[in-house]
Length: 263
Image (cartoon, rainbow, N blue to C red; front, side, top):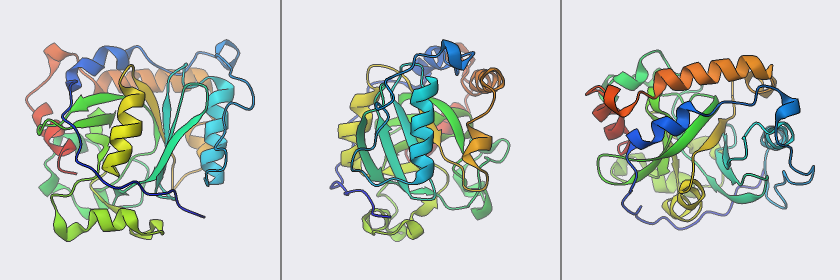
């Protein structure tokens, strides 16, 4: 499959939103109670136009729009198998696509408690980018750079590619035409800095959104096309557990925010 055009990397601009400011928005969002109640865009709204994309990515995008699962919010599809990220507006228009670096290990579930641990304690087999539906919003890392928090509980974010580890050749990995060398992170999703600054940040500046990370060990049907009521309950409880309010933030949150700038 032809890979997306690769923007030139640029240094991320300083962030303006603290991770704690996202919590209220996160807790209020869950999939609609039923497909019948969901806002439905025109059938041709979910389109990749001429952009190359996998069958799974296309199916999930069409399902999101048809079922209104994004609740009128912008959304991102992360195709782990293809090593790509697609940013789509609330009505299904593709805003941009870019290559992405992902967790080193193949898998769809983060190990329990992984977000509470230092990077040095995480084994290669535990370096997983989890699959699923995540309510996402912008936040800061400790260096002042902005990130898109995907799964705060597991310390997973989408951000401009990290270049502080020359031995990992992250920029070179993004530049190759094959996704076979895109697995290097501890779970975070790295994209070209220019793509983050010109597509991701403007899209999520005004509101939260949804990130759909496609599975690689399970089918998309088992991960996304479930009974809406059950999905809503699961997502709501998971986001509540993963996103404590500002007054509930333990000191370990500094570890999560530090990881967002190091992975």
